[in-house]
Amino acid sequence: MDLPSIDWMNESLEAAKAIITKFHALDGLDDFFKATTYSLFIQTDKPNAYGYIRLAKGASNFPIGIHTALAERDPRNQRMIVVVLVHELLHALHPDWGHDKINPLEKLLANKAGYFDSLVELQNLAVSGKLRICNS
Image (cartoon, rainbow, N blue to C red; front, side):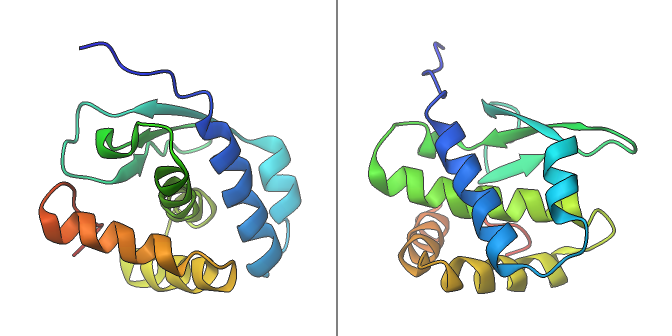
């Protein structure tokens, strides 16, 4: 299967970083983002997850998989990817946190940044069975 180009998703990555930087009070946040890089890819190995990040102790590059349902470039998908990336970046920032802490913070940050519609869209995709939201 030929996977589409995803270079455009880097805009969503930068938007996710900006949301976290603006709304998540955390010492060292700017330094963390300066010291880390991210490799986005369309995931083919976890067909149900809307996204995931590969965390490795001491790593500075984090591969992030995005569900194939979000691979087509359009404004709706781009906004949902921002929310997915907020979630995955929170995992990188807080590797010792479970979804009991990540999911509520993801929703709070997305809402503060005006992404409520995208949260609802992701939930609708989960209800439709196209993908699964973490721990739901």
